[in-house]
Figure (tube, rainbow, N blue to C red):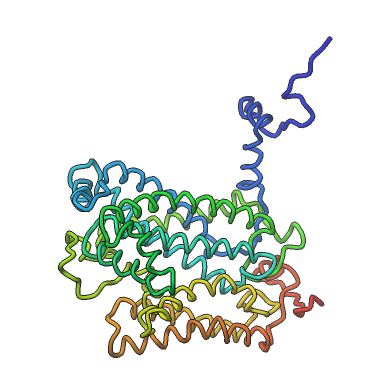
Length: 427
């Protein structure tokens, strides 16, 4: 009587030469999964370096989690101990200064990578069918990042930490009926204190792992239909795609090297450039800073908030500036994805970019004089772009003809010609 080994079972894999890997993969096909997703995964052959920022954001997220855990081991979440514990990390913990600067600079690098990733999606129409849910989960990640960043901003318990927590939590009091109850729940009492700091510390520690979970779902949705591409057309044959490895892993590694150079420059040479100097002063409830401002990556929303004189309407406008992104796939009726073939949309896209930069500067300045006027103009155009311009341009714009396939524009750079089709699919 003979017994067939499990490794010889018809369902087992033989693509791995290492017997240990083959034994594990037969019982838990994790290596087959990783090989398919990271090695054999077919990616459009025309992706440019703007597609690097998704993976760069993922790498920074891992850096933020690793450094955050290290910081949490030495942090004291109490009103009397928080500021001193941060100073202890900076002065007494081995390489504590490096860990903290990696964490604080990493927050800015994380938002920078995600913002570029979002604007790339807007430019190339990555929010259009069948990738609507992929886009929605990306916006959910942004929302979670903003909450995590706010909670983290309060932890050093400097002047900006205390007053930022006071101002932002009190915004919820503008909500009719339930606003005061929400503020009391957030603060853990009737004022910013130990209960507040403990709650924010717990949430700041928890939310990054929630972000990781949503990122994993984001990747599952991405691999369901594959990546969008600069031409905004689907891959129709094997010649339109390349294996992710080695072609795009090499491209990602080059982008990572350049990104880490910028990251390292801020960490080692200008770590305070992205931090508010007032947060190096211990929190003092009796002294209000001249201007209470969040970090740069939250300034556009803060500018929208300050541009509206009514508190409730200001909070609604700030929330709406984020929530409107969830419905972008249904606000743009154009059948063409990429701005490469949408000349009118391309002009308004760059106006939106300039508008968002304007809101960053307006949010960092007092809401008075010219800055107040500019913040109101910027906020007005922001909503005008998504609620009026996007639907009208999508309906009435006449796009340029699309290439028949992804490979033809790529091969045409070597001297060939490009076949085109109209938006209805005819050649």
